[in-house]
Length: 183
Image 1 (tube, rainbow, N blue to C red):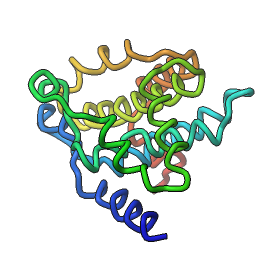
Image 2 (cartoon, one colour):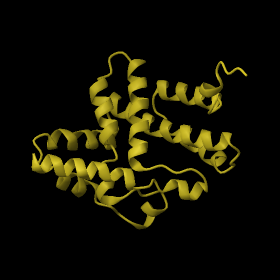
Image 3 (cartoon, helix red, strand yellow):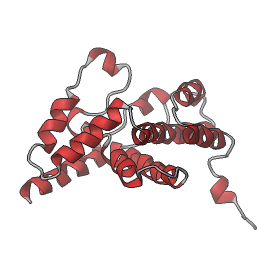
Image 4 (cartoon, rainbow, N blue to C red):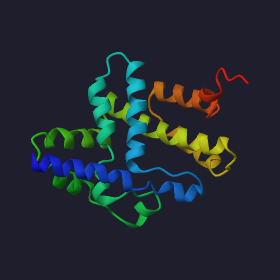
């Protein structure tokens, strides 16, 4: 149980690790843990729309996909040009003494390889999380997301992901809040 307690502390630190891409946008902020929650929730919704998807595997994959960032940090695309993080070593070191370590490491590998339906859906959930943030920032008047939204939408792999992105783009970020509003 000691190794599991250590793992829980390690996962908990993700609340304090900022996602670095927001620095370039000049607006917004998010921790890795907040991003993981958003991605996992999106995956849950997507799994409800996709019969035949292993929902548990998809949701679990999204939950742990950025876990290595507790050790290597969140690197944006510019940093990745100059700094090479050893994610495989980080995953191996973090999971080596866990009774379910191989399972956890396997989910991260599957996410990164993008070969299964679940991993492609998990990837899209990851991108949709970013699209939601970009759209929200754009809706409150910032222009920096305008150049990123088409790029991120182009990354989507699944029909469900593309359909959700289309609806996100045509829905104001506060539509849920204003629905049924009366004075």
